[in-house]
Length: 194
Image (cartoon, rainbow, N blue to C red; front, side, top):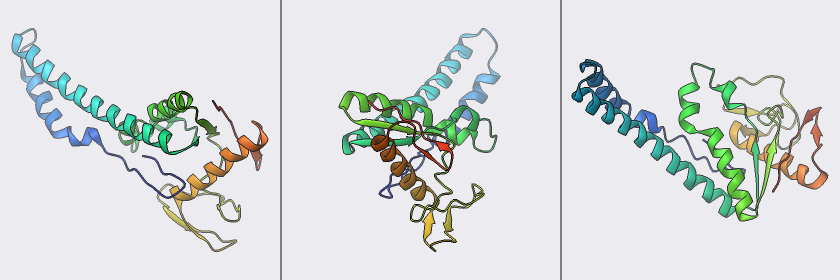
């Protein structure tokens, strides 16, 4: 779900997948009930309870993770992702929606403001994954299936996500040091600090 610049990877807890079999079972039962009957209403409530359980588990996890990040860090730098556009990908939509990226960044922003921390958003077109965090070399393309890569300039081997976290942190600190209109290779970096 998120990766920090010190290499911590939280992973996606996949709450929907955890309850998928149970949800499917109760949805099948609901489909077989007669319209307007009391048994259909009971079955509908059971399906709604499972959906509520998934939502509550996701919300609890996001609150715990965001609180932990805010408590442990003075400056929080995140990438401003277009989650609504990313959900249009049929292969990734369920996993992205289940992770709750948009809600996670929203929680980070308001909790940072409450705690007096600095929250910085980096523009989504900043080449965080494709840029070498050691020498600054930017690869032309990098498909999603490439999880590790070697820089042709300096020879450093990078984990894609950890490298992106290093670059986002560096860009966020540059925003704090030099102001809102920092750019790298004509890629603008956006800031919204508390």
